[in-house]
Length: 101
Image 1 (tube, rainbow, N blue to C red):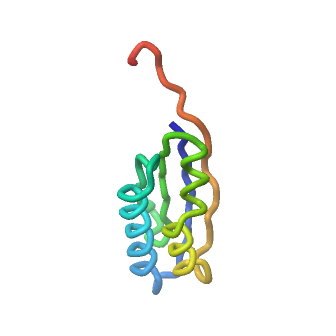
Image 2: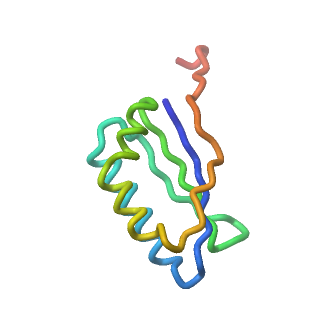
């Protein structure tokens, strides 16, 4: 499984708009994009205007397809002018434990 995590910091007056856009992106991506397995929005424990997106895909090709898709484009149409990010936190392939497979 290919996973990514990014952070965004948003202006306080745009917080609700960011949350709505990110949740819509995640909802539509997991429902309509083959290979998208998880798309979680996480609010920072200390800064109410910092958010993290944790996403999981079948493989890097599925992630690339997400990045070229309409939901990704729509998200950045909404937040692109005012959100600070994405700042990459991680990008890579999950290492499975063969003892648990």
